[in-house]
Structure formats: structure tokens, C-alpha cells
Image 1: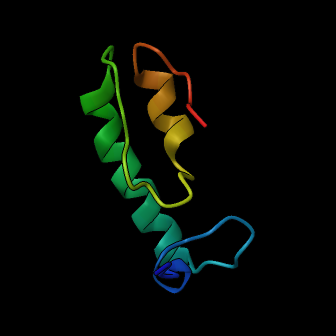
Image 2 (image 1 turned 90 degrees about the vertical axis):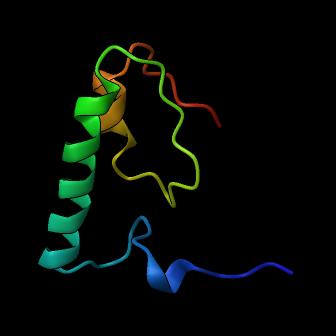
Length: 65
């Protein structure tokens, strides 16, 4: 059974509120400090809109498909 969670998370191309944008920025801004120079695997990241922010700080910024 496939469950659609797109109504509870931000998805690419969807309109988002200013509050959603602030929350997203806040989460990744907080997390990037823990990624500095480390190997990072983000799991269950929704569409992964903020992964570029983490990849800039991580030791290896590759993104797996």
C-alpha cells in the first residue's frame, strides 16, 4: 500500500508560505553545523529541498539517486 504524504510536506513546484520557507531554512541551517567535514546520509528527507545546503558543508557532497 503506497501512502501519499505530499499534503504534509513541501514538494518541488508547489506554492509554500513564508512560514514554511522559514521552517525549512531553519532546519537545514541548524543541521549544516553537524555536517561540517563529515559523511552525511539524510534519510526520509521528503523531496530534499535543503540537501544542497548540507552538501556544501559535508565532506563528500555527492547526492545518490
